[in-house]
Amino acid sequence: MSPRRSPASLTRPSAGRDPKKRILVICEGVVTEVQYFNGVKDHFKALPVDIAHCDVDGWGRDPLSVVKEAVRRRDKARSAARRQRDAFLAYDETWAVVDVDDHASLDEAIRMARGSGINLVISRPCFEIWLLWHYQDCPAALTTRDIQRKLAARLPNYDKHLPADFPYRDHQRAERRARQADPDHTAPNRKGRNPSTNVWLLVNGIARAGREEKRQ
Image (cartoon, rainbow, N blue to C red; front, side, top):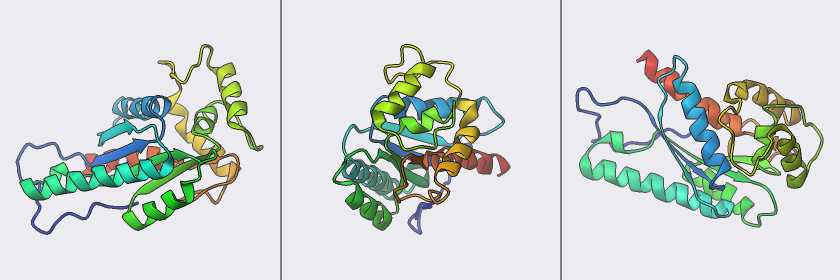
């Protein structure tokens, strides 16, 4: 994962300031993904984890635009940190969340993420496979429509909005299914097979940042 490179003069000076790590998440989708990661934050807050300060934003564009926005937002925060000499304003980790679908810009987005220090997580064919793996095994290749149909059977009245009782606690079960479906999809900035996702890297990153802060 890409740690923040703070300017040499930056410090976190003020006594009593919140020491939580700062994580930026830029999503391709504007509804489901944003709801999910906000739900993950709430889930970890209910556990003995000092959850990281995590900003989640849906961008609603293609993968390259999502990565560009992640870079822009990260760099803007770094500039503010330098101007105000306050490292609290910069992000410790920056993530982008996209689908494979039929996006022509995905390969370029991967190259840009690698070169810019962005952690790009990719779902194939779509983010909803990660949600579905909270409920059931799905090892065979699927279309986006297949996944949405299966998810709707699990979530009555599903229209991209997650219910309040979505099983966020089962993220480790979903991770096991993701690892079984594509054992090589274990790092950011790569495409996996169909179906696959490495969203669990980000979920674990949020939890890990909280645990690290709690130990300090």
